[in-house]
Image (cartoon, rainbow, N blue to C red):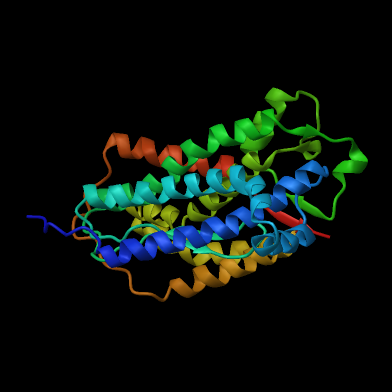
Amino acid sequence: MYQAFPRPSIKSLFLAIGLFLLTLATALAAGTQFAVAFANNQPGSFSELLHSYTLFYKNPAALLAGLPFALTLLTILLAHELGHFFACRRNHIHSSYPFFIPFPSLIGTFGAFILMRSPIRTNRSLFDVGASGPLVGFVFAVPALLYGIAHAKLLVLPDAQTPLTFGNPLLLHLMSALIYPGAPVQNVLIDPIGRAAWVGLFATSLNLLPAGQLDGGHILRSMSPRAHRIVSWLLPAALVLLGYFGQSMLWYIWAALLFGIRFLRVVPIYDPEQLDPPRRFGAALALIVFILSFMPMPILVG
């Protein structure tokens, strides 16, 4: 007999709304930076980002230029977290509302998360909670990326050489080849809506890394606890190598995080019933989403 958990408290709802509004502000600044950079045939600009924050008191109306990026990104992240939230409700797991993380960075946020306040007791629930977020978020990111590529600029090679370079996931390569056959993908400058989709895909690929308590870790553990244990030990080392050869500090940080959470207590699954065919198909879809979204070198500065 499942315990009927109450909805999250009103206090936590106000906290979630407050964090959302703060993240909207930082995403607006990031989006304004992307809009100005796009107009100047650049993928992004750190100096323009600093200027965007001065607009909050100098000219707030100018921040409306960042609205397409901000709304697109927050919609994708919210869809991801609501996928987790409703999967928890469906499987009688007590969870919080989605909490956004505002951060004054180039992309405006550190993402979002929910807190699970009761254990995941069945193997199938573990899969549902892990897979729901990335799959739903991906569904929202794909049309936004398609829009961004359809409204992209094709740059000549000198204009494409900028100090800031964003990596291109496989999905972007495929869509770009379809819309601009023969054009090098590095010369396709996607608009701010497409850049928001890029951030959403980047977040999806990070969450689908098959280790620890990440979404991908939940999916792999629901299929094979033994494989999950092995991969959770090996993946940090692989990310260190990726950081070394790709010259990206990001992968060192993620390697350290994944190595650290290996020492956290993992609640046992009391019902280890194997996944049914629809969930195994969902696991295959999650792998395809990971392959389409992953970027070995997401951002290069130099």
